[in-house]
Length: 275
Image (cartoon, rainbow, N blue to C red; front, side):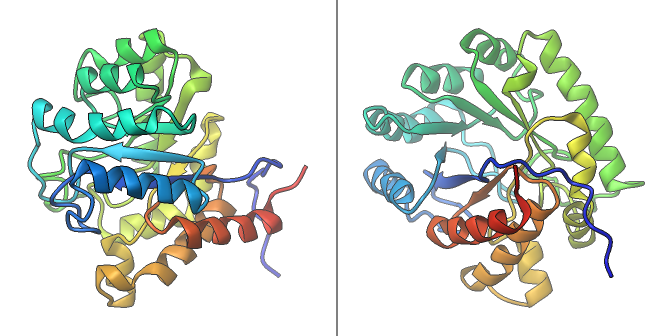
């Protein structure tokens, strides 16, 4: 009989974060929502489908992506954030730029999802601290343009833990409240297929920090590699990774297919969460 997981699950439900890419080069929707009007409609639909929060981004972070630039990012995301501001819903902005975060927070966003973990813009930590908002610190080796160029680790989970320890300490020194921080191991960001599977397998190692974990596996290339399927046929693989992530300690999942993954999370929560 398999040993029971050491992960302590609470009665709290898994947070469902819906993805809104206002970009022409998203790996998944390939620009379907680059028009702000379409992106806003998509965000509203994600809430209707069961999202607890939507994550609005104006710069692609797919492997090989080039930076969009501040003005382009603002032009993409601000109309969407303005449209969402009247809904009274939780909104995250996916950015590493202080100015974008500042403008987003002024429009009612309550979270900054930073793929650089406060390394991309020296002013961002201060913006987050002053606002008292939540933030996501994600692990990434390199930058999106180069992150998949032969990534190597002595032990990927150990290395990510060391990274989290340093980044959380940095955030605290900048005045960010510890209870405002989420951690994201960066599935697919500077990792091989083997690294990504190891992260999922050993996810509970990151619970040592006592901070909520956000996991984003949705439709990514590791799923495609394991199942030998294109990006539009990875929903079952995504469902499996979502269930495993929750079982192993994830507090939130970042997903494209909100309706289906909200159901997967609810079923998994019924099994693993208690109290």
